Image 1 (cartoon, one colour):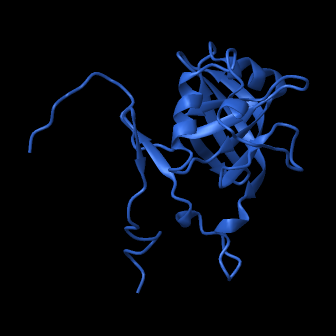
Image 2 (tube, rainbow, N blue to C red):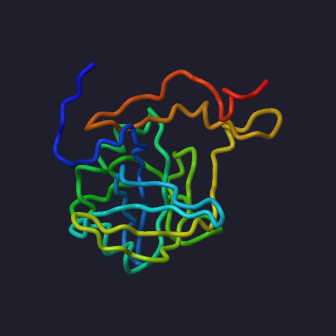
Length: 186
């Protein structure tokens, strides 16, 4: 085997591509597609999203200090792609994509009802990094689509048909390969 060297860059793939919803009171809510999203702490539950300051959603999130991460299924992939290539300055993405704003008990910022999981986030810090600024946020609540609950009351996200983003392309998640700790279980 031989290796080829590339210049420094982000090759950490695949990633979840998510639709992040945001909104200011009295204005139409917006959706931005992001792949620079991740878990940064489990207790307290915290996440990060990285957004270019030039993006329409940037100022909305910066001023309201809240956003919702909406997971994307294979069925929602066309909406996810569109939300990433069209600006909310020019189009009402909820309306154009026939998506339903969902208001939870956690915040006034709407989630996307069609998403299987909505993660409600309050911004704690904005870190200026370079091409993107990172919003570090605490998760204040989660809503899930009850159609993914099984007869035992367990949430079966594996049945949602989630997609992933890899180097400019979208992929459905494949077959289950194992579960955490399977290599050492007896």
